[in-house]
Length: 183
Image 1 (tube, rainbow, N blue to C red):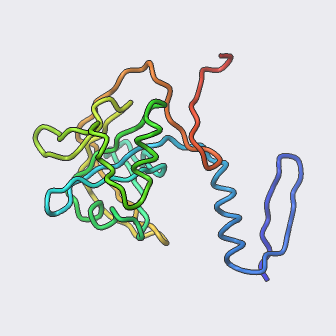
Image 2 (cartoon, rainbow, N blue to C red):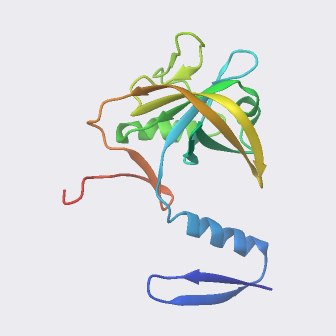
């Protein structure tokens, strides 16, 4: 048996965990407490078809040189595309994009059926024109990390959407939006 420590707001609890499954669930439960922006990552597969998935694992890594990180599960239907594409787009979603986020998180659906996406002018990589932020990125390096690959990339172009929309956030296994303090 392994001991797993969890810490509540006011107490520390130690409980015995009978196996790896419980440790994995404890980890998932703990990570559900982290708030993350929701993005849709899009790329072209080798045949030029549009591919994409919902991600909450996108973050900045370095200012010099500029690098971002996008995590993709080894079991993702988009894994091969993202890890072999020379470029991809991070479409940071606003509160109005919950349906897009859900569709791109679903399996066995046409994720682009809503018609909201367009091809980037000089590459054809799909992007969401009304996203809160668009980052067109060139893949720099892929790092294996457990059951995910981490794609390190250099942002080569930014497009900022309107600031009148609240960001779409993932927290406690659900979508939320932020509001200004005191609102």
